[in-house]
Image (cartoon, rainbow, N blue to C red; front, side):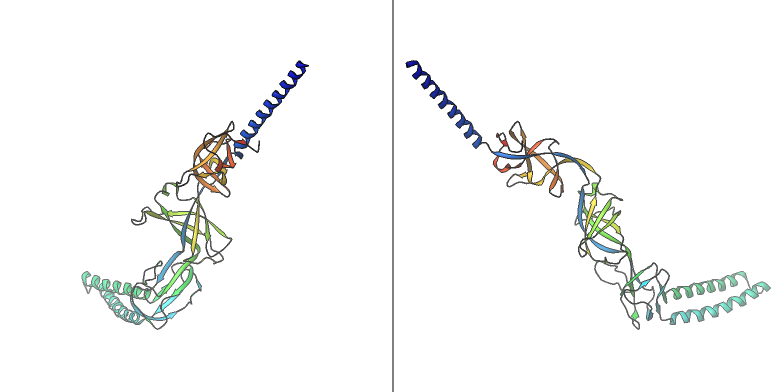
Length: 346
């Protein structure tokens, strides 16, 4: 009987001990944070640098003359297309008429001395003197003629008539900020293609080079992009902004993009391969600009500092953590370096 009581007591003690250990295990699990994790991927992507820029005409010229005169006729209205060599403006020809009369008189003198020279009646010096006056007179006629008729130096659009017929043209600079500062009667612009200018900070210049592909987004034209490439980078920097101006050429066949429009310029750099993690797996230390991920090894957390390289949608390319590592996705705000965790997705 005593032996039976002893066995019952022993069994009760064993049961109590197992129950206590089970409670300890359950309590330990309850105190261990539950997290979800993901695996760091290795991915190739094309990084980009984004700038703001302004649209300009590919070519721009204020058409005028080197001599003042009355504007007699402007053959094109604003917005009309012209071809290279088209006559755009005619100025008064009083000076041309005077130059032609002088030329005709000197021409007669030249013909007379030419005949006398053939007969040997005048010296070579006298002949050379009259010939020089005649050559100068012909050059004057051509010069004045060029300043009474203004032709298009390239194909484009009449963007602005800065004077009207009947006004007297003087050589005064046009003072419209951002455009040509030269004097003129009409402003001619080539709008297809167009030029987009943007400033590159001195720290980025090492990554920017001629020929890199570019995607241009125009602020006033939604849901459309324009492809181009860097055509030119100025070899000097602004002393105030410490930046250099770069230029991109884009097509504008539909004439929907206008000079002066605001643009976003995405410069596509060379492809690189890097570790990619979800954006929400990053943890930023409060009060700093330092980013971290929490790596889980044998259910233990290790805080690893990373450097952001490029945001790719909901993911980000980083430097500092190797591909294949298990990192915490959900629950990172409940863990610390060296803490034991339970992983829910294993």
